[in-house]
Image 1 (cartoon, helix red, strand yellow):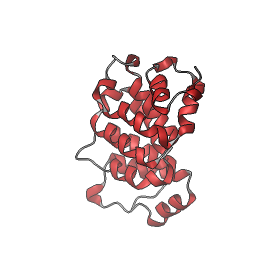
Image 2: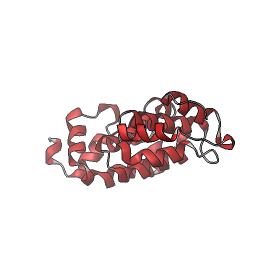
Image 3: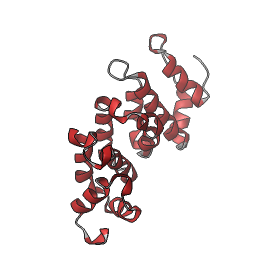
Image 4: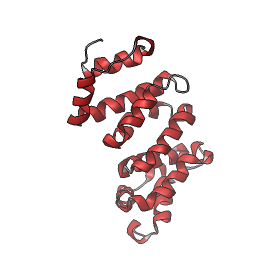
Length: 178
Protein backbone atom coordinates (compact mmCIF):
# COMPACT_ATOMS: atom_id res chain seq x y z
CA UNK A 1 0.00 0.00 0.00
CA UNK A 2 1.27 3.45 -0.91
CA UNK A 3 2.17 5.82 1.91
CA UNK A 4 -0.24 8.36 0.47
CA UNK A 5 -3.11 5.96 1.16
CA UNK A 6 -2.27 5.59 4.87
CA UNK A 7 -3.46 7.78 7.70
CA UNK A 8 -0.76 10.05 9.08
CA UNK A 9 -0.47 7.94 12.21
CA UNK A 10 -0.05 4.74 10.18
CA UNK A 11 2.44 6.39 7.84
CA UNK A 12 4.59 7.73 10.68
CA UNK A 13 4.58 4.32 12.33
CA UNK A 14 5.58 2.63 9.07
CA UNK A 15 8.46 5.03 8.44
CA UNK A 16 9.82 5.37 11.96
CA UNK A 17 9.49 1.72 12.94
CA UNK A 18 11.13 0.57 9.69
CA UNK A 19 14.44 1.95 10.90
CA UNK A 20 17.07 1.89 8.16
CA UNK A 21 14.68 0.07 5.83
CA UNK A 22 12.20 2.95 5.59
CA UNK A 23 11.14 3.90 2.08
CA UNK A 24 12.32 7.33 0.98
CA UNK A 25 8.96 8.11 -0.64
CA UNK A 26 7.17 7.40 2.64
CA UNK A 27 9.53 9.68 4.58
CA UNK A 28 8.92 12.45 2.05
CA UNK A 29 5.18 11.95 2.47
CA UNK A 30 5.53 12.32 6.27
CA UNK A 31 7.35 15.62 5.76
CA UNK A 32 4.68 16.79 3.31
CA UNK A 33 2.02 16.13 5.93
CA UNK A 34 3.91 18.58 8.13
CA UNK A 35 2.24 19.71 11.34
CA UNK A 36 -0.29 16.89 11.08
CA UNK A 37 2.55 14.39 11.68
CA UNK A 38 4.11 16.13 14.68
CA UNK A 39 2.07 14.51 17.45
CA UNK A 40 2.90 11.04 16.16
CA UNK A 41 6.60 11.78 15.69
CA UNK A 42 6.95 13.36 19.13
CA UNK A 43 5.79 10.13 20.75
CA UNK A 44 8.91 8.38 19.45
CA UNK A 45 11.13 11.06 20.95
CA UNK A 46 9.45 11.32 24.36
CA UNK A 47 8.69 7.70 25.23
CA UNK A 48 11.58 5.71 26.68
CA UNK A 49 10.60 2.45 24.96
CA UNK A 50 11.72 3.84 21.61
CA UNK A 51 15.22 4.65 22.87
CA UNK A 52 16.11 0.98 23.23
CA UNK A 53 16.83 -1.59 20.57
CA UNK A 54 13.39 -3.18 20.75
CA UNK A 55 11.90 -0.94 18.02
CA UNK A 56 13.61 -0.56 14.64
CA UNK A 57 16.96 -1.62 16.11
CA UNK A 58 17.09 1.63 18.08
CA UNK A 59 16.58 3.87 15.06
CA UNK A 60 12.94 4.80 15.77
CA UNK A 61 13.82 7.83 17.88
CA UNK A 62 16.61 8.89 15.51
CA UNK A 63 14.29 8.63 12.51
CA UNK A 64 11.65 10.67 14.35
CA UNK A 65 14.20 13.40 15.16
CA UNK A 66 15.27 13.61 11.53
CA UNK A 67 11.67 13.90 10.37
CA UNK A 68 10.87 16.54 13.00
CA UNK A 69 13.88 18.50 11.79
CA UNK A 70 12.80 18.21 8.16
CA UNK A 71 9.35 19.52 9.05
CA UNK A 72 11.09 22.27 11.07
CA UNK A 73 8.03 23.45 12.97
CA UNK A 74 9.40 25.49 15.86
CA UNK A 75 7.07 23.72 18.31
CA UNK A 76 9.26 20.63 17.86
CA UNK A 77 12.27 22.44 19.26
CA UNK A 78 11.04 21.56 22.77
CA UNK A 79 11.36 17.90 21.86
CA UNK A 80 14.97 18.44 20.84
CA UNK A 81 15.61 20.30 24.09
CA UNK A 82 14.12 17.36 25.98
CA UNK A 83 16.50 15.01 24.15
CA UNK A 84 19.53 17.22 24.81
CA UNK A 85 18.80 17.32 28.53
CA UNK A 86 17.67 13.71 28.96
CA UNK A 87 19.06 11.47 26.22
CA UNK A 88 22.65 12.57 25.66
CA UNK A 89 24.10 9.12 26.30
CA UNK A 90 21.48 7.36 24.19
CA UNK A 91 22.28 9.63 21.23
CA UNK A 92 25.89 8.52 21.11
CA UNK A 93 27.58 9.70 17.92
CA UNK A 94 24.27 11.09 16.63
CA UNK A 95 24.77 13.93 19.10
CA UNK A 96 27.97 15.29 17.61
CA UNK A 97 27.51 14.08 14.04
CA UNK A 98 23.91 15.01 13.19
CA UNK A 99 22.40 17.12 15.94
CA UNK A 100 23.95 20.49 14.96
CA UNK A 101 22.44 20.35 11.48
CA UNK A 102 19.13 19.03 12.79
CA UNK A 103 18.93 21.94 15.24
CA UNK A 104 20.00 24.56 12.72
CA UNK A 105 17.18 23.49 10.38
CA UNK A 106 14.80 25.38 12.68
CA UNK A 107 16.46 28.60 11.55
CA UNK A 108 16.37 32.03 13.19
CA UNK A 109 13.33 31.21 15.33
CA UNK A 110 15.48 28.74 17.28
CA UNK A 111 18.50 31.03 17.58
CA UNK A 112 17.85 32.51 21.05
CA UNK A 113 16.84 29.19 22.62
CA UNK A 114 19.91 27.44 21.22
CA UNK A 115 22.13 30.28 22.36
CA UNK A 116 20.72 29.92 25.89
CA UNK A 117 21.34 26.18 25.82
CA UNK A 118 24.93 26.67 24.71
CA UNK A 119 25.52 28.74 27.83
CA UNK A 120 23.84 26.34 30.32
CA UNK A 121 26.91 25.18 32.21
CA UNK A 122 24.91 23.97 35.20
CA UNK A 123 22.83 21.31 33.47
CA UNK A 124 24.42 20.53 30.11
CA UNK A 125 27.66 18.75 29.39
CA UNK A 126 30.21 20.63 27.29
CA UNK A 127 29.60 18.29 24.32
CA UNK A 128 25.89 19.19 24.26
CA UNK A 129 26.73 22.88 24.61
CA UNK A 130 29.13 22.64 21.66
CA UNK A 131 26.40 21.01 19.56
CA UNK A 132 24.08 23.93 20.37
CA UNK A 133 26.86 26.39 19.64
CA UNK A 134 27.52 24.82 16.23
CA UNK A 135 23.81 25.20 15.44
CA UNK A 136 23.86 28.84 16.59
CA UNK A 137 26.83 29.61 14.37
CA UNK A 138 25.24 27.85 11.41
CA UNK A 139 22.01 29.83 11.83
CA UNK A 140 23.85 33.13 12.26
CA UNK A 141 26.05 32.59 9.24
CA UNK A 142 22.95 32.06 7.08
CA UNK A 143 21.10 35.09 8.46
CA UNK A 144 22.60 38.48 7.74
CA UNK A 145 20.54 40.25 10.42
CA UNK A 146 21.64 37.86 13.17
CA UNK A 147 25.25 38.04 12.09
CA UNK A 148 25.18 41.84 12.01
CA UNK A 149 23.59 41.89 15.47
CA UNK A 150 26.34 39.65 16.83
CA UNK A 151 29.04 41.75 15.21
CA UNK A 152 27.46 44.98 16.46
CA UNK A 153 27.53 43.73 20.04
CA UNK A 154 30.89 42.04 19.53
CA UNK A 155 29.58 39.26 21.75
CA UNK A 156 30.39 41.16 24.91
CA UNK A 157 31.06 38.38 27.32
CA UNK A 158 31.91 39.21 30.89
CA UNK A 159 35.11 37.69 32.26
CA UNK A 160 33.11 35.54 34.70
CA UNK A 161 31.23 33.98 31.75
CA UNK A 162 34.29 33.18 29.65
CA UNK A 163 35.18 29.58 29.07
CA UNK A 164 36.43 27.53 26.17
CA UNK A 165 32.93 27.37 24.67
CA UNK A 166 32.26 31.10 24.59
CA UNK A 167 35.75 31.71 23.27
CA UNK A 168 35.07 29.06 20.62
CA UNK A 169 31.95 30.92 19.57
CA UNK A 170 33.90 34.13 19.19
CA UNK A 171 36.54 32.32 17.13
CA UNK A 172 33.96 30.63 14.87
CA UNK A 173 32.34 33.97 14.17
CA UNK A 174 35.66 35.75 13.73
CA UNK A 175 35.08 38.21 16.57
CA UNK A 176 37.77 39.98 18.52
CA UNK A 177 38.28 39.50 22.26
CA UNK A 178 36.75 42.18 24.44
